[in-house]
Length: 165
Image (cartoon, rainbow, N blue to C red; front, top):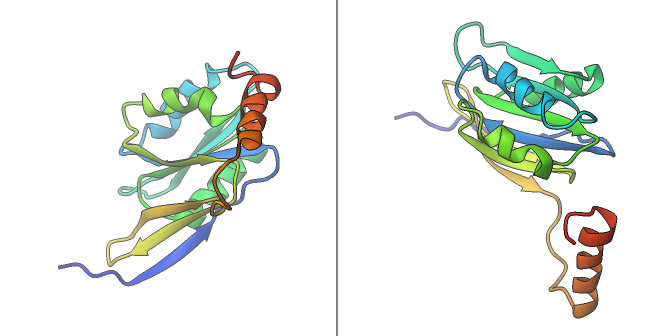
C-alpha cells in the first residue's frame, strides 16, 4: 500500500484583474484543446494555459494568446506539480464566461477552482508523485447576509457586471 510522504500548500499567484481556473485532465492534447475552447469564447479574452504531463516527457505544456499569462500559468502549474493538473489564467473575462467550454473539453476530468480570490492548493505527495487533495478559495464567511447585503449583491449582478436583468 502506498503511503503519503508529505503534505504541502501551493499558493497560487493571481494578480489583480486576473482569474485562475485549476483542474485535472488526462491527455497530452489538453493544452491545445483548451486553447481552442478559450480562443473562440471572446475576442477580448486574454489567457495562458499550462498542463502538467503525468507520463512520458513529464513536461509542463504551455499555450495561450498572452505571454505574461502563459508564463504565470506555467509558474502556478510548477507550484502545483501534480500530474495531469492544468492551470488557466484569464484577463478581460470571468470564469463564468468560459467554464462550460473548459468542462466540455473531452480531456477535462474536473475543476478544482475558478476564482479571482487568493487560492491555495492542498497537495499530497506519495512515492509516485503529487496530487491535488483540495483547495482553499478566498476567506471564511463573516456572517449571514442581511436584506441590505442582498440588495447590494443583486445590484452588483444587475448593474455592475450585467449578468441579470
